[in-house]
Image (cartoon, rainbow, N blue to C red):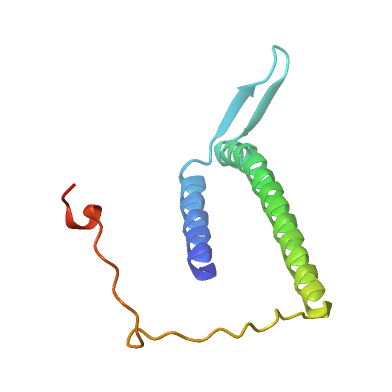
Length: 120
């Protein structure tokens, strides 16, 4: 999976490099009435990409962090439960002596009820 991710990043970088070569022109960006930013088109593209990528990346990391905390808490709970069961004295119920009845030893089949035969 990492190789696929690396290939996608390399393709994106090559695509951006080709875009930057063909669009290396100065542009003027008016931020306010008296403030004008003169920069190249690829720099604006990088800034736009960063402005969209960084918040989503931060959100992804926060969700991942929260899920990892939840998994760790569940694993610790499971481990403590298993340790508590391991250290408990085991008690077994007393064995009850009941004779095992087999169907051939005098067991008669039950008479069918009206609900079994379908008539009432």
